[in-house]
Image 1 (tube, one colour):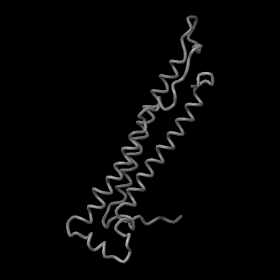
Image 2 (cartoon, helix red, strand yellow):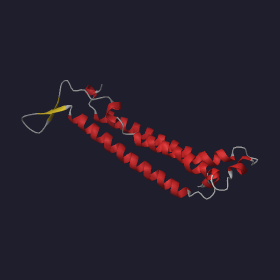
Image 3 (cartoon, helix red, strand yellow):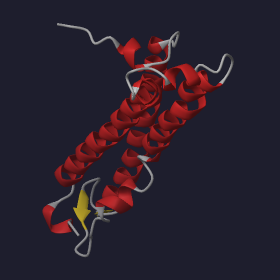
Image 4 (tube, helix red, strand yellow):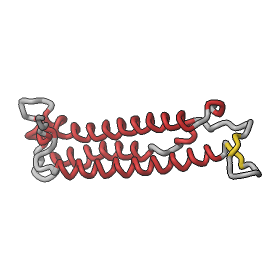
Length: 159
């Protein structure tokens, strides 16, 4: 398996492994929070579909029970992914692009290079890739949550 040389897509001296670790830690925390928020909302909504019988601990489905729509249950569960994607894009401006504008002002040298898009490629490729990974992770988790929603909800209680 060949490894992609990411140093071609970052300013010189950038600690790419550290950026990847921070992104992975952020994705892990966002996923844990999303699972927690959605799990609590789904558990409460599912419990509201039933009423306890007086003869035992068996639950009986209420005749008028309707599960809330999926988007209501998910609510703001994936917002941390979106904030993480915005943070990755802010990383492009704050760290990657400012690398060339501060200190020795190497931005002037970058603009004179024969490869016209070298500055843009080195400044925004990795942050855009990080933001895309965040959004794809949010989409994958949303689809997983939707599958759990349809699996858990009784068919007669679907909105």
